Image 1 (tube, one colour):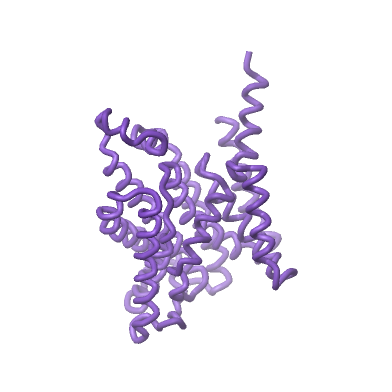
Image 2 (cartoon, rainbow, N blue to C red):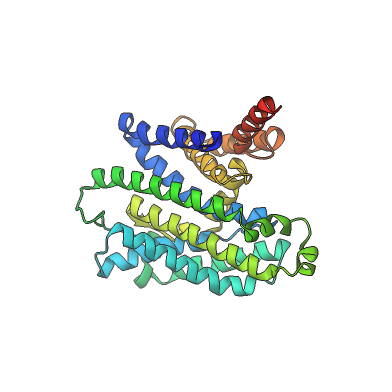
Amino acid sequence: MRQGSLLLLLIATVLALLPLFFPWLGFVFTLALAKGLAALGIALLLRGGLVSFGHGLYFGAGAYAVAFTLRSVPLDTVWLLLLAVLTGLALGLLAGLFLSRYRGIFFAMLNLAFSMVFYALLAKFYHVTGGTDGIRVPTPTLLGLTLDRTLFGEALFYLALLLTLLLGWGLTRFLRTPVGEALAALRTNEVRLEYLGIPVRRVILLVYVISAGLASLGGGLAGVAVGHVVPELAFWVTSGEFVYIAILGGIGGVPGPFLGALAYELIRTFAFKYLAFTWQLLLGATMLLVIFFLPGGLWTLLGERRLRGRRATAP
């Protein structure tokens, strides 16, 4: 097993053990993993030189799909999360067929426009969505077990951690495929890829659909964890959080967005408690430090260390 895999396994082990000593961290980590999934979708697009300020659309859609389903059908948590993914994939396909034609600021702002339309629909149709008050998400079963809210939250965290590891492993392998390599090349020279016979729009559409599915899975996970969904999940501020997290963690590796999400949630939690009126200032200062000193994100701290280790052992 490579050094990088051992390092990631160590980080996952630490995350799994900490809630046993500090139970409140389980909820914080669950939200971090949910937002990390959405930020990972943003990071995939950033690898191709694209940025979306509207992935709150898919995050909110996944959360509301779970909430609406539980109103009438008492599905298990696993099936609910699968439903959230399918919702995101379907919406991502519909939007991606149109958005894959655009680049740059047009791509970013059209995503924002779709997200704000969805937010407005959620806020205005009060009798269906609960308006700005949102709707409650009942506690579903987990793997067939009926648990109280506390035990459910603890078990949900470990399920989220397992899903994160599996998806991270799968996407790491995906980025090494020809499509993944084409995505990285897309940022530098799209015209050359077309000359080589690579269908750029299809690559963008595929990656966009995957990113939408990841964001919806994160939204479904967040909705089940919190037990309440509101239209703000689809607001532009939420979409901006995902971009912030992706940049904070870095797009050089799949674990980067999750490191960024963990750092974001921990900073916001402690800053909101001890610096209630200046926590945004602390988050802004953190981003400035990352941009100035770690332009590749927090992931470069681990990536550069591994690179130095390989260079030191090279003949």
